[in-house]
Each structure stands twice: as structure tokens, then as C-alpha cells.
Length: 475
Image (cartoon, rainbow, N blue to C red; front, side, top):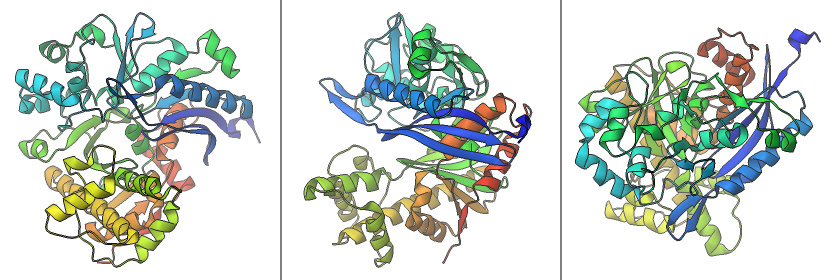
């Protein structure tokens, strides 16, 4: 094999709301593969002042994972980091002031009132293009009593990059989820920040996917056994996932499905209409300046929280794939509830809260666990179908297929019911879309696929190496 043909290796740090992974990605002309070298749990921790992330424990896992990646593949050329959105830490000097708050902590409600008293939501939408979510960063910052002190606000992926390199930057795709980035110029809206009491000097310089963030600090390089640079990728995990969504045509919609279901279309320009605002559609930035016009739908969170409650009740683990298989065999005539009901947004006793939502609508939940799971999956699928239909109406774009990527693509019942309820074919996979997108942006930056390779070129490699499974609608 010639040097030009030899696969080149990159490390992807992919942190989700329930677990994190470190992956090795190998890329060549007709090769795109992942090797998982570390997987570890992640989730909220309760402190006296609310829900937080255990960031120090997370960093230890990341460093151990990178060390294992280098042990297995010494030729790793760079590291890319993606995580969930909106949550942040504040640096005072070189120190992290406190553990980042978890987005499901209820302090955001106070921030909503503070912000909307100064800037009406309609004006916010015109400036940042974001749907209303009470945990958006600007609401969290408004409720943060210490955020006004001198320091630097770093979102979680930027905070990880800082620990690795010492750099203080904000990657633009994740910055677009804060509510403080202009939807038109894609720069920090300093005037908006000051207006709601957030010092613009808290906001670090912006970088784009593909830019080098920096080399590893000496102590970090010594710990992991190598000194590759950290390269910015789509650090919002959905931005990376959509890079690897096949999206064969502009008529393809996508659903990035995990804890959340991010449902929408890829656009070149924003749709800042009253209808888009009222329907709760958001404009988040993607790689290469694309706009992810999408609606946040509660995804597999409902299922995982329900199973967690049943496991606590049983005192034993539940085989989720087997339970979903029984749900697929259950009678389809189950009630459908609003998957986005506000009462379902917090952890704790999910089966009882879902049952309460169902009964409030005059229906009765299925008596068996298989039927209950069927009801959850059908309800998520209906929410997906509704969001796809609304995105088509708001943009005037005809949708002819849905790419369902991420962990949800393994749930065959969810894929089929989404096809059935939307009336559109669902193309499922790749499962590891986020890590693949992370690796692809690094590979392009390294010149593996050509420095001028387009997103379409990257997606063509995904389609050739990870062909999706097709689910045709049955009704």
C-alpha cells in the first residue's frame, strides 16, 4: 500500500448527556471506520445548589481514553471534541469557578423572566433565531449570580479543549446555541449580551470547524503519550452528526436521535418568520456555515428514563432490545401523548408522569410494559412526523425522505413507526454519525479528502462506507 493510500488516524472525543466515548477514526479514499477505545457513563450529579456535571471526573475519563487511543494508534494526527450544547463553565484566571450546571436544573426559569423583562422573545428570535428553551445559555447566564465577575465563559467542548491546550476559544456551531450569536453575521451579539447583564468580555474569540485550536499542554501530552493538535470540529454534537447524515438531496430531512430528537432541514439562509418562531423552530449553525433549521423533540430520554424506573422497581437490569422487540409485537392501537409535554422534561418516575399525561387526555395507558413502550415509541415517532411536516410547510420545501441517524437508528420499531406516521421512507444510519462527522472534519482539515472537499463529498464517503437501512411506510 502506498503512503497516499494508507489510512490516516484521528481521535474523536464524543461526549453525550448520558455517556461519553473516545474513538479512533481511520480515513482513506474509500475507508471510513471507527474503533471505540473508551466508553464511560455521564449524567447529572445533585449538589446542594442544584444539578451539575461532574466535569473533573469527565476529564479524567477523556484523558484516560486519549491515552488508550494513542497506545493503540500512535499515528493519531489530531483530536476533535464534540459534546451537548448550552452548558458552560466560567474560568476565573486559570481555574474553573464551579462545576458546570446541568441544563435540566431548574434555575433557568428565573433567567427567562430576567431576560424577557429586558428583551421580548420576538426580538430575541429576530436576533439569534433560536426557539424558546428555558435552558438556553443566555437564560442560564442571566440567572448566574457569579457570571458578571471577570472571567471567561466556555461551553463544555471548549472547556475540554482548554484543559487539553490552554486555549480559550468558542467553536461557532456550539456558540450558535447560546442565544448570544447573531443569526445573520454569526458573531457575538455584544449589544444583546450587555443589555441582559452579561459582560461581552466574558465571551471568547470564535473559531470555525477545521481550525486548529492548539497543541496539547506539556503535562497532557506526557499523560497521553503523544502531542497531536486539537482541531475544532462541529463541537455541538448535532452539528457533527449532520455532517455524517447521508442527505442525498435537498429534499432530505434529518432526525439526529438520541436523548433528544433534533428534527429538521439543512438550509443556506434563515427562516425568521412569525410562523417559524411560533412553531418553535431554531436556527443552529452547522459545519461550513450551513443552517440546521430544526425543532427539538424529546427523544429516547422518555424510554431510557422509563426503563430506569422499572429497573429500580425490579432491582434488576432490563434487556432493552428484548423489551423493544416485544413492544414491536404488541398491538399498535395505543394512545399517543405529547412527547414534548413539559411535565416529562425532568428525571424521576417517568412511567407515572407519562401515565398522568395520557390520562389527562382522556385515555388509559397500556397495562403491560411492552404496550407502554409501544406507546412511548409511537408518541416519539408522531412528534418526529409532526416536526418534519411543519419544517416543510415553513420552508416551502418538499421532503421526500428522512435520514434518521444516531443511536435511535438502532431502534427498528422507532424507524418503522416514523416512516408509517410521516408517510416517508426512513433511511436509518449511521449509528455513530456524531463521531464520524467529528473525524471527517479533522480528516478534511488534514488534507486527507482534499482541503476543498465539500460537505457533499464527505457525505458521499459516508454513503459508500455506511449504507443506510431503508424503512418504507406501511400506511
